[in-house]
Length: 63
Image 1 (spheres, rainbow, N blue to C red):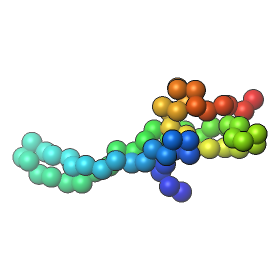
Image 2 (image 1 turned 90 degrees about the horizontal axis):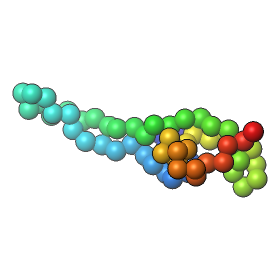
Image 3 (image 1 turned 135 degrees about the vertical axis):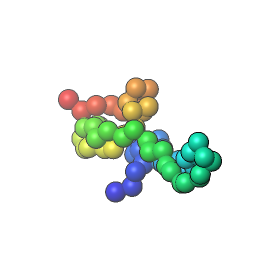
């Protein structure tokens, strides 16, 4: 399953880890995803949503 938010489409971003000795290795920053019961187009379903969307109110939680 893709590491992406189903509401906003936020995906991992990539960059480098740089040590004190200036050694460079690749790394990635993953979005903070949570599985939430939501109502999408009138249908109750589980979705992987980032916490930024939950806090912003872009997700309608199912009761």
